[in-house]
Length: 445
Picture 1 (cartoon, rainbow, N blue to C red):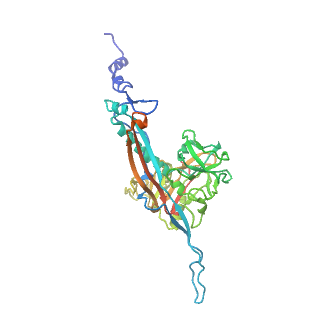
Picture 2: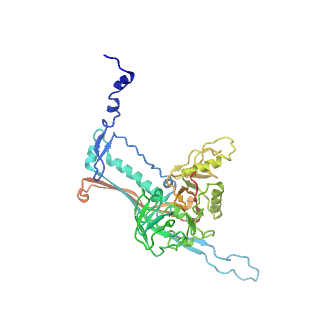
Picture 3: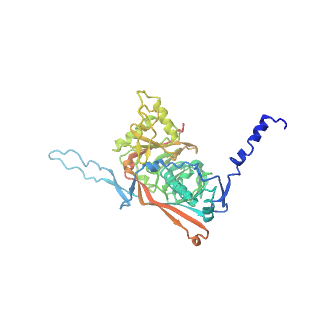
């Protein structure tokens, strides 16, 4: 036998190793999985890894309550004028001035997610090399997607700047397009802050999260570059950004004047008064760095209104920014690792020196990747917002708990498919809007 080189010897010794054990063909099984034109999917065994972010921090943190026998409540927003004052011995009584009451009306929203699995897929995937119980796998995936979708709704943004569009579509940055859902009713304000559709109903019919195009019902005025779109009412859950909103909010440099028909009736949320809505800190679409003064002012505003902040939610960018701010001012006097539980979530392990952030001024911090971001007047997506909340007045009310329905009526489906449906009915409710707050127009770094 002639001599062979080292490289040839190694190649011969490993021949078949990668092709038969780790190769692209040996373990590949053609299995029936999808519904539609493409009925074949390739799998490499029973282990299925989900390469998606399925964390639902905000959903887990907010308490769940039964809906109860109510479709709303009345909120007292003003004490009246001079109804209490000193009276001299022969003085007149105080002038009668009744309290001001504002109605808040909330109805439950229906959420649903469905899936289908061909019966051939169920049989083939139970064989060697298949996924196993594909019906159970799809149900588990649907349940995760269902909860994740609700979490995204709870953290959906309210107002965004759009580029030039038409009477039947708006274009927003693609990365924030998922905040719009089919069935949402929008308002449009031009760059001067004048609402140009006060008498119109503009309903979302499609959302392209790749291009940012939001298709809507036709309205009288096409959007121009720099105009703002805002949510008047949602088909899905109300978001914390809807609640932490106020009239005259400067979104991307456009002032939201509103017409009284906006979400939660923004015309009644007079900024800077006792009757105001949330404490909102904007910067007219101009990016700025997160600072301790911004957070402290927000906490102070909530406490001056009689609330007590119990949860801070933001994105990971602001979490790290706050970490750097606090580290620069620490005086290290030992470490004590601790965590704080909020609902079904727990903060990251923190230390009293602030090396790994867990709380700020005793308020738990829970970063959530779904936290909405601000947009500048030039359509640039900025960093995530920060929300400081008194969760005593925030709840997810459940009118109908999550249920699963399975259907094997092949005649109704006109196909040999087992269909599944997950649905529930509820809504995010806030009984005191003035104890919520947000900080916007922040830098991501």
